Structure formats: structure tokens, C-alpha cells
Image (tube, rainbow, N blue to C red):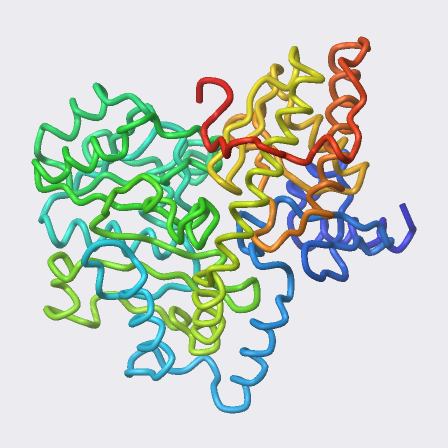
Length: 444
């Protein structure tokens, strides 16, 4: 590590976030991001990384995507943040685009500056529409760190700030447990059920067949609203534009963020069915956010929505999903006692390791070999692996070869050496004749 970097990290501990800075160093990650382009990051000391974390999908279209940057640069000749109180050309344009591309009869868009705030808007909207307070979410959920959102998530993020939700108002049930969900929803007193379509921070466990639709049906029967948190699973990452579309489920409210910004200007959105958006007519000033729907952010969002709906992008996602999925399963076959599962829905992937902190070791080994992916905060056995939507085959092959080496290194560090089943060559990763498998290779 250069002295300049060490000095910078020391200042980060002094003036920014001592806990987070120290934790990354404890994990063996001394990354200070400098230059970034496409799916590459460069550390301030010059180390290059392929970004397979993408900040939760914020950079699904790559860092500094040229089309998004050009749109915002051109927009700055005329626009700025705008004024959240008044009608806006770009705000209305993006709202119209979202009404056209979201499922069912979702119509009204309410803007936020980030995903947590957009989740708060969704929860407040459900409470107003139903005149009920109870909110049902998933055990080990994550929906952000703002006032209501943090109460729906794991206590890992709420307890430290004395923000745990009361047992009367905030109920959590295990993911994929329909009996537990039914016991709560069918009481008929819930304002909503909120779920990430595939829970990201929990390590992307895949919904069992029929699970999401069954929850949707329970909500319909009892008048609870179904809120689809698509902040990480939307915008093409699951194959269709929205992850919920791939399961054939129509929500009452959909939340999008992260990638909607193109990684260039913060923006998030809550899209609501007209039936449940009554507060917008009753009192349009009831929720206000100075930077929500900033006009420059809307310019970025409009370009992102246009790119993500191109047929060639969908085709590329299908290809790289097959290619990477097949290659990962070849690597898994090399280390079956350690690398035990691939949870996959297109480019949404959670890699399972048979050790309580297995993904933390794999993360460090990948970092050493020039790939950045991150362990799941609420399940460190699982590596969140999120390749970009516009990756090409050469990059996929480079990722897979580095992954094979890193998994072997992590396994050896944790479990000792053993002979490998075989040595993988670049050509081995070509999925000739292999069907696309979007479900987990092991029980999710």
C-alpha cells in the first residue's frame, strides 16, 4: 500500500466512518476507488478490478455509461435539480414512461432521492389507502435505512438506533414459508406485504414455485396491498424489465431505484396503482422531498429506461446469464464440498459456500485476483454476484477464470488442500447446448 493511500485511509477513519473503513481493512480490502469506466474500477494505487457488485445494481449499465453521461451533460445546458413543488417536463416524461413499462395498472409515480425514501413512500401510501397500520415483511429483510423502511428490515440495522418496529405494527415471517405468511395476512388487518422479489441482502434465496403469486392472492383476498421492492431486481437484471414480471405477479405498488440513476444522478421512484394513490388528490403536499425527482436525475432515468428496454440488451442478458451460470456450475463441480450452490435468476446470483463466513473469504480472494463482489451482510455464506447487463463473452470468461482460482484459494485457506477434479480452460465455459437454468442448483 502506498503512503498516500495509507494517509487517506487514516483521514477516512478520522473524518468519515472509522468503523466501516476499519472493517474493510480487517477483511483485507483496502480499496479506494479512483478511476472507473464500464465494468472496471481502478484503486488509487492503480489496481484494476472487474466490478461484479455494481453497488447493488446501480451500475448495471456500467460506470459512467457514455449514453447516460451524454444525456445528463446535454441536459445541464437547460436543466438543474428543478423545484419539487411544480409540474416538470422531465418528471412527467419519466412518470409516463414508468406507467407504460410497469406491470398491471400502475400509473402514478412519486419520486424520491434514494430507495429507502421510496420504500417509505410506498408504506405510507399503503397505510393511507387501507387505513391500516400493520406492515408484513420478511425475516432478514432489507428495504433501506429510513424511518419506516428500516423497521421492516433486520434488526442488524434498526436496533443500534433504537428503531425496531413494534410487534403490533411490524410483523416478519420467514421467506418461502406460505403457512407463516397465511397466518399473518389472513388476519385481515395488514396494510401491506412488502418483499424484495428476490431478497438481495439475505443472499438472493429464490422464491419457490408459486410462492409470490400465492402471497399476491392472499393480499387480494384481505385488502392488503402487495409492494414489490424492485430496487435491486428490476431494470432487466432478472431477464425481463422487472423481476416481478418473471414470476407473472402484478403488484399494487412497485419501487425502483439504484440503477434508475444510471450511476450518474440519484433518483428513485414509487409507482402506484391509481386505485391506491388517493392521497395525491386528497393532499398532494402530504409528502415532499426537495431532491426527489430532480430533473437531471429524470434525464438519467429516461435514458436508463430506454436502454433497458432495447431488445438487444434483453438478448445480451439472456446470453451472459447462460454463459456465466454454466461456467459457475463447472467451477462448483471442482469444489463440491465448499462451493455448494448457485442461486440464479438471470444476472441476479447468490453463490453458496459451505462455511459460516465462506463468502467473506471468497470475496477477499476475488479482490486479490482483480474481481469485486461482496458477501451478503445477513448471510456471510453467500456471495452476491451481480455481473453487468452489457458484459461481453470475453469479460465473462475472464471473470470465470479468476473465480475458479479465487474459490480454490479460499477453500484451501479454510479447509486445506485437495486434488482438483480437473483444470478448467477458457473454452470450458462455453455453454454449448446447455439450457438456461435460472433456478438454484441447491435448495434456496
